[in-house]
Length: 397
Image (cartoon, rainbow, N blue to C red; front, side, top):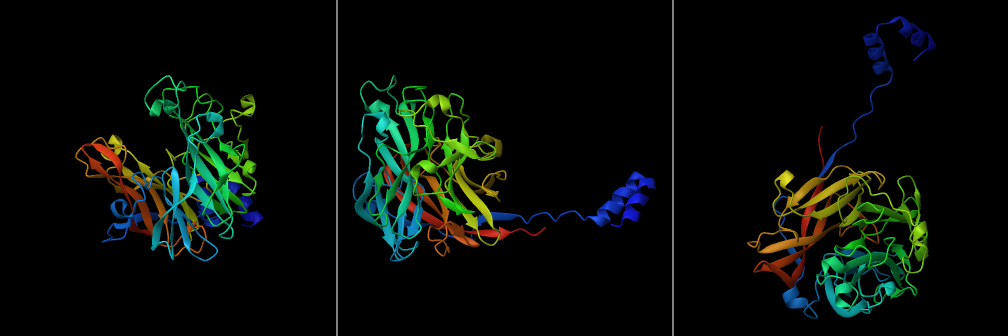
């Protein structure tokens, strides 16, 4: 717009000025919207059948699927219980379980060891040989005499996230000694008993702009708000380099409540629109956006009785869209004794991903889930790993 024309605007009515400015600087186009849905006619497929493939009674899929390609190009996947076993195959659609144990904690009664029960919760490898992991570490004080004022497991549950690594392609993992804490509450396990406390269930690790990120849930406590916080490292090999997001930048190192000065610990800033543990984060390559999925319980506000799988979109991993529903079905939080099955631990992965760590998807991928058989309103070890095909659709204006 010329200077003369701008000067002329001083003498025009407000409506005319607005019209001329709209012509000079057209409004930015609305970003394209994408929805996630099941492929029409898609059928549930069994990946791991507990009745046929288990190595022991409690050999169960008890965490969201995490996978990578090793040096030989084979897929290594984990969706294991606290006795962590890998699945191996030529592709993500052809993985079979192994009875070899890749990692098992020591049922250590000392809470400072962070080695009571541990799950391989996230993996990332640059080369298929060196694998860096985030561990979901549970301390169940009810199982250690004198450690809890209550008898119920949930009221005595204390949780942290630590780091571990493998240098044989995921066949075995080693935890640091002393433990390298990635996310922990600023208090010890005896504080605040009566509910589960701490940091839980990291998402998978994703690489973005020269750094690595994971989303970690917390139930809060003391000055920490509950929600999901974002963590970043610029050096995966340095387990102490993870930093939490403070709402502006990644400035928050973890403080080990047993070895550090908790008075220096500061709370991370939970991200808006992320209600609870994130099953997976993947980048949709056609749009360049990040997709997070969640397994959620009943929601009377949305007339969802048993539970649902929901999703959210982000351009930068910090700002997330309001949740949308992918599908509804009974989840672990359902109270309906008539449920034949309940589902948990949803995670999206694309067998054709261009990423060694399955961080990306095309327009079609699979939703992997744990399918739990319900018997007399109770759930036990009878659980399968299943998948169902989904698609990502660009919506027309």
